[in-house]
Image (cartoon, rainbow, N blue to C red; front, top):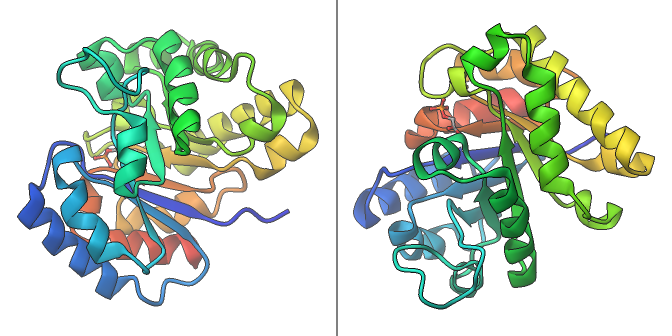
Length: 253
Ligand code: PGA
């Protein structure tokens, strides 16, 4: 079964409401004829209200970069999945390596946040990936399988198939060093194999596994031509409408 390509832009802590609105307008215009692809952007939470009305009706989804495990309460400085859903978000990014490395998010946090997203009606996009040190020590499979097992612990098959996985080797994020298509495909095939051994066949067939880490217009098409790479989670290059549109064009080519 062919999986529909999925390209997502992680804007990280960039673009306040004005710049985010301008970027959203650029995306609306440059992605009008994008063909068959799922698209989403993750603005900083403060810019989500500026972006949503511009993208309404375009089919470009808006997601939240961080959610708390709780929907409300005494948790200063975080976001609620329910509140993001109320605004009009569709996706929640969970377990990005910057959240893991800079904010101490653990595999266990990722697991509870998947529940929080689902309770609120948001679709989880779960990020996993090894550090350079782990890769050099030959531990890629061990690390990504550990992250995946923790994230999917106790998750039923029909729910598992609604989770998007983003494989983002930490050494490729924001560094300009992209995993080669062969390196990325090797890990993606293993991740799909993991799904196939833990779930009925339809889960591995349907689940979209995105690659992230220095994806640009000039390397997107080759990466996404790999059989187990179903799209991209794009950081830096998602901040320019033309670059993001170039990546989308590479994905649907
Ligand atoms: P990058 O970021 O494209 O700037 O490497 C990817 C990400 O962090 O999702």
